[in-house]
Image (cartoon, rainbow, N blue to C red; front, side, top):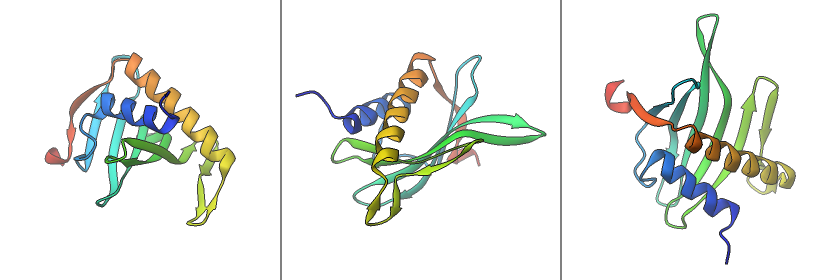
Length: 135
């Protein structure tokens, strides 16, 4: 049986980040010629970990995330899903309330995240010096 999009996203996150059950508070990844990639751990419990995944560029002296996504990882299930997406044009979220799901956003954001992670892997992003131990 072919892996689901959530399983493919999990595998790609593993390739980029490494062990997904023990993510530090912050990691930075770099690839020559591309905007830096930041990973911030936002929340974690026994069932899931929520991270922010963002490319950063400098504008008027400020670091601006674009795009910026929140992703929930389920390490025991080996699955991950997009929760939110934000860029300079707008904001989208999958779960409008705990019981209300925007199915179009769920499909679109997971498809975007899957494609974005493929690009990140192809572009050769590697972890650099930025992590929570250095803050």
